[in-house]
Amino acid sequence: MSQDVPVTGYAILGLLTFGDELTGYEVKQRADVTLRFYWVSPAMSQVYTELRRLTERGLVRADARPDGGREVTTYAITDAGQAALRAWMDGTPAGFPVLKHTVLLRLLIGHATEPSRTREMLQDYLDELDRASADLEEVRHALRGADRPGEPFRFPSLVADWGLDYFAAEGRHARRALASLEDEPTA
Image (cartoon, rainbow, N blue to C red; front, side, top):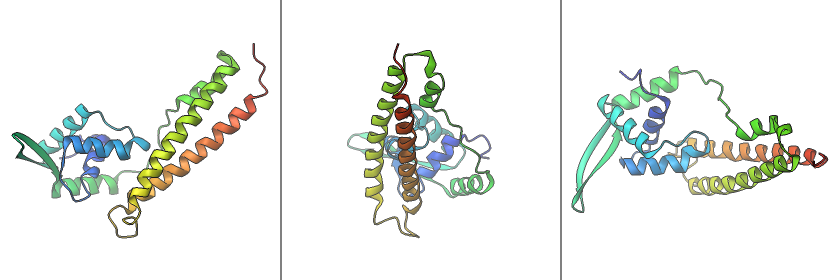
């Protein structure tokens, strides 16, 4: 039944496992707050496409209700959705992540531009890392108190910690590369 569910569909199923019913807009908000740090946060149209697909397969339940003169649809994961998500979680190898790192690609071919431009790109990346780290630290802080074993946000807190460590490592590598480029002559 769920063989043609893409990984984004499983991500959306996962976002619906925290015990609440969400509108498509709320699913998108939750994705933006969480997925963007380690996975592609789907576009709004993709969220609705996946919710429709998941609903058609019986993995998600859609409930329409009036709300201030308009109809609002909320979505909740079904027992079949829980089973499909569990089967995917239990039956899918960990796999190695595909790294599409534009900073590393640009650094690899840094000889094709001025060293000052490569240094500027690395500094811009460090600035972006600082902003992302601050954002993720806010998310991590919000999870405190619900992150103990058995609590609903135990696993999201582990992901946030991993992400913070990843950003710190990225910063160390970028600073090291930047420092090594300080000796590059400018044309």
